Image (cartoon, rainbow, N blue to C red; front, top):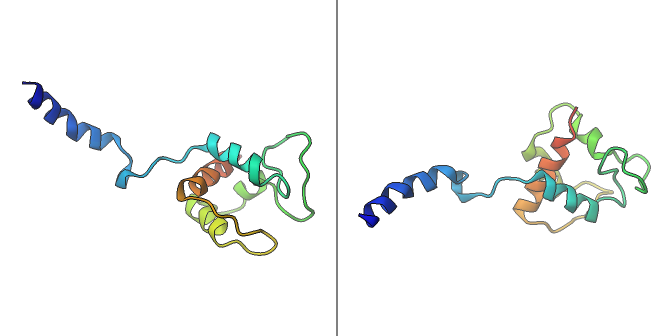
Length: 107
């Protein structure tokens, strides 16, 4: 009987997992990563004290509030940056987390 209970629970486990076994993006982890990697050029959090910003580079809140940002577009921009943004080697989930964080700042 224990085996049949296990077999009944297995499909429910698959339903609870994100599609393709992918991990869901985590905005909090993206925010922590942004504070680690992006603060030299971007304001990563509204009202954050002590942040240095390079002139002409948008804050993450400004990026989130531009027309049409999607997680995919933000991740693509991180993967294929345009000057003056440096090429940073990040995992897929790190890019997804950064995108989730940026989009969490949208008004």
